[in-house]
Length: 160
Image (cartoon, rainbow, N blue to C red; front, top):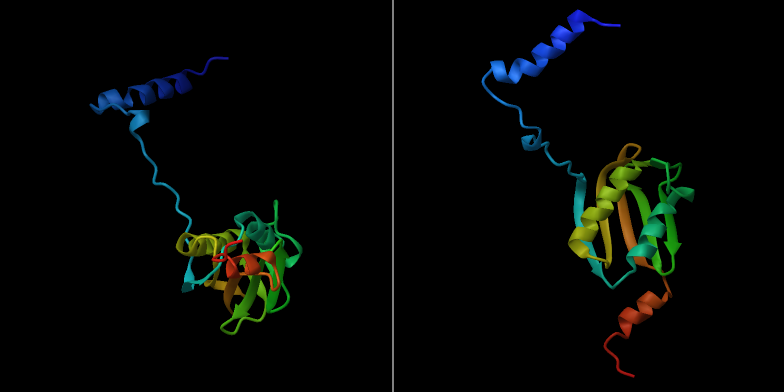
């Protein structure tokens, strides 16, 4: 089936750059890069030590019973929640009047990234804007009490 009007429209669309005296170069079109941003009310505070990035990520994704995979929100009907993995503990606490934890996984991970960018893999705390019902969310990465990570940090200057 032939549609003359459609062919004419397509033909004029192809000629448009020529009739305007310019060529559209598809290799010279640049979109702005997307940037993740964390909206923080309290900037990261570095607390020392050395923690495993893997263990801390596992602890983060285990908060609230698990937010790994397709789950997009951490929603806990309490003001605090924590999870540990092999020496790293992640704790989230509703602050500034917050009554329950309610934050998207993306915003939680952006706040974590902001803290890691500043502190590396040491213990830290950061407070994300919003993140709790009626308040903000304090996020803390720390060593488990009594873990080998704490002991290793304490004896790192000793020789055997």
